[in-house]
Every structure is written in structure tokens, then in C-alpha cells.
Image (cartoon, one colour):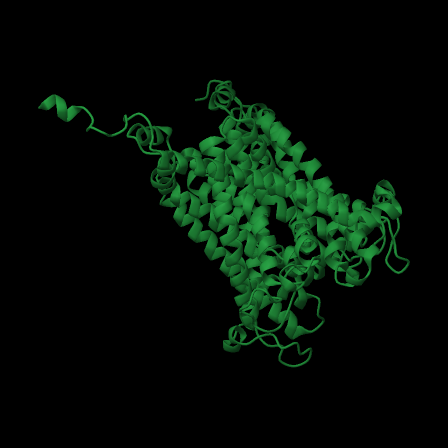
Length: 287
Length: 335
């Protein structure tokens, strides 16, 4: 027995709005299901043994070749971008948490890291193009490592933001206990703060890598597109997103098929990174 | 005997001070980390200046405002006015917000207030997985699935709603609406994530008070949750807008790349980001064209800065307490 009877009109409205909200949620999930469905349906058909073991050969008619060089190029460039962005990103986050919590300079840096997360990826690409490609830095115009720099710039604020949140979760009592025992600051950071925050740092970095791996725009004018596999990042380097982008523009079914196959490969790589990131964060004892 | 074991051994320093080596290491850590932080600021400043310097040929020829607000982008005449691109960017992101924000807010409400507790985590993860799909894959899906499947529906809308302004006439395959729809899907995760975080900060007192007064669930949402999180939703939408403005590859593939201002929302168009990605190859040997594209990048950069500043302002106002702000904004950055 309810104390205040609810009129049928209000009850109907409540039910209607609940249904609307549930419907909108279903609508939000629909694109994901559709994308996964089409990726699998069209992508698996393109997969074959030679799909992963041959390079694109540039043939417009006939067999267009596989995506070996694109997979290897993506791994190389994202790997180098990780080596650039993760140490710097965690370093900046350490500064913000250990030294810059209250200072004006600290809040300014924090603000501009926020600004950096909002900068479109293509603007990072333009910047690297201007600063490194036009000037022929390193002896040649387009190069894989320049693509890595662009991706690194893009990943940097993501790493910093996530690392800062995790480092803030390390209890101050741990820091104070170590300092009270006479440990120097650098040792507190290296032995107490970083190990405690490690799972969270790994999660944030993996999410940043997942973001970087899918980016196309900054690579178009830094690493560009080539057919051959290339282990030397001072040369033009192929990548999965750039290969897909180029294949979409071709009015030839086998090239489009390769684009679907490559897209499925790329999404699987990114999804597995995301899942590993979630598992890593589950191991964290910080909440 | 016992007293001497308590006092420090002869010849050592007083235990309070640090050894010079340790002090040096500490200072090294401090200044090294500060240097890294300063590097970020220097990088952004350098970034802005270089973009401006390289765009100079275009600005000196057309003027900053002349470049930005002239409705004429014609590569063959080597004349560049970015208004069609700017308008295209604004149209597509407006469509994205109109479609994306209501769905995102409804999803956040459903996940935080209505759905069974067991469904909460899987639903959250599924929406966030949308953020893991790369832009180029959205583009691929848009070109080969969305455009052909939706064409009939769009033509139907265009015919039936032709009494509205900016609607009517034949519908080409790639158009503003398709681009806006894909952008709406792409901003869904970030808007949902931040809205959810903001809604989680609504004090349960407010919700319980509304329910205790006899409100239905929906009335509780309308009277307790929505007013409290209004500024947060505005901030989340602005962050989504920032994403939509800067999105490049997916839009390039589905907007038709026509450098004119379309007369209706089913017309082909162009955006600032798309023009850079698309015309970059041909501009390599034409200094004015290249400068114009870099200038378009600068305009895009400034636009996203303004939108993001506004977004931070809203989110900061919305979040009650510093911690909540940072966390809400961070989950947004990761989404």
C-alpha cells in the first residue's frame, strides 16, 4: 500500500520515459553491433594465409597483395611513439603530483595538458610536417620516425592525464612514512610511488597506445604510404590506417576487400590492447 | 655502554641533514621533472608560432579575416577563402550534437539510474568500446554500408520534410547529414562518459528526497538529477563538439569534398579538417595552396581551443569538488 497514490497519468508518463531512455540506450549500442557485424562479415573473407605474409604490390587489377608491411609499419611506429610519449608523459604527471600540486606553474601545465587533449590529431600531423618534414630533418622528407613523433605528441596528454589520476591515488601516508624513515625523495618516487601506481600507469599507457594505433590523419603527411616492408624508420613507412584509407578510395572490389580485412586486423589489435588495459587496472589495489 | 650505542658513531654527519650526493639526486629529479613540464608549455608555444609563420603567405595575401570569411575556395584559380570549410565544419558538428547528445544523456541516465545493477558494467564497457574503433574504420563503414543503406531513407526525409528550411531536393550519396551522423556516433562515448561521471556526483540525498516525496523515477530524474547536472552536460557536449570539429578521416570519406556551402543538410560539402587531409598531396608544389591548408589548420586549432576552453569552464563549474572534476574530465580524455 503506497501512502500517496500515483495518478495513472503520472504512471504512464513514467513508463513512457523509462522506455524512451532504454530505447535510446539500445540505439547507442546499435552502431557498435553493426560495425562489428560488417567487419567480421566482410573482413574475414579477405583474410588468407598470404594476406598477412605478403606486401601490397600496387597492382590495380588482379591480386593486390596483403598487408604485411602495414602491420609491421604500425607496430614499429606505435612502438617508437610509446617510447617517446610514455616516459615523458609519466614524468610530467610525476611533476604535477610530487611538486606541482599547489603551485601556479603546476596548474598552468595541467591546464595546457588539458588543452593538448583537445588538439585535433591532424593539427599534430601538420605541426610535425612543418617542423620535421619540410625542413628535411634527418636527411629525408617523409619518414616513419616522424610519424612516431606525431603519434607520440597525440598520446602524450593521454598518458599524462591518466598517470596523474593514478599517482594522486597513492596515499600520502606512504610517501610520508618513507620520507620519515629517511629515504630521499627520488627513492620515494622510484621505490614507493611508481611501483604502487604501476598497474594504473600500465592501463593508461595501453589506452594511449590503442588510441595512437588507430590514428590516420597525422601519418598521412609524416610517414605517408609505401608498398614494401621497411624496418628502417628513416624511410617512408606503411601503416594499417593509411593503407585502409588509401584502399577505400579505389574503385576496385579486391582493394576494398583488403581494406575490410585490414580494418578487422586493426580493430582486433586495438581491442586486445583495450582488454589487456582493463585487466591490468583490475590488478590495481588503488581505488 | 648503552648510551654510546644510541648516539651516532663518531665522525658521521648529524642524521637530520641529507648527504650532498642525495641532495644532488633529489634536486636533479625535481629540476628534471620541472623541465619536462616546461617542455610541454614550450612545445605548445612553438607549435602555435610555427603554424602561424608557415600560414603567413596565405594570410598576407588574403588577410586573416579575408581568408577565414571569404566564401570562395578555388584551387584552380589559386584563390583561398575558408568560409565554405568553416560552415561545413559547423554544420556537421551541429548535426552531430543534435543527434549525439540526447542519445548520450539518455544512455547515461539509463545506466546510472534505471538499468539492473548487473547490466551497468557491460553497458558502460560497450559504449566505451565505440571509442576504440579507429576513425578510418568509421569511414570505411560509412562509405560502404551507411551511405548505400541510408540513401533511400534520406531521400524520403528530404521529400517529406521539404517544407522545413535547409531540407529538400535530390540527395547525393555523401553529404553533411551522413558526416554528422558518423560524428554523432564517434562523440557518443566521450559525452556519455562525462555525463555519467557528473550524474554520479548528484547527492543521493536529493534523489532520495524526491522519491520520498512520492516522485516517480522519471520525476526524480527531472527534478533532482537533470537540474544538478545541467552544467556538466553542457561541458560534456562542448568536449564532444571539440572532438567533432577536429575529426578528419571519417568525415573526409563521407562528406563529398565539394568546396561550396551546401543549400540543405543533404548536400555535399567540405570541412576544415577534411580539406587538409585531402588536398595535401597536390599542394606540395604550390606554396600558396600549402600555406592556405596550414592556415585552415590554424583556424581549426583556434576553433578547438575556444570550444575546449568553454568546455573546461562548464565542467569545472559543474563538478563539485576538485577531485570529481579531474576524474570526470579524465575519463573523457580516455574515452
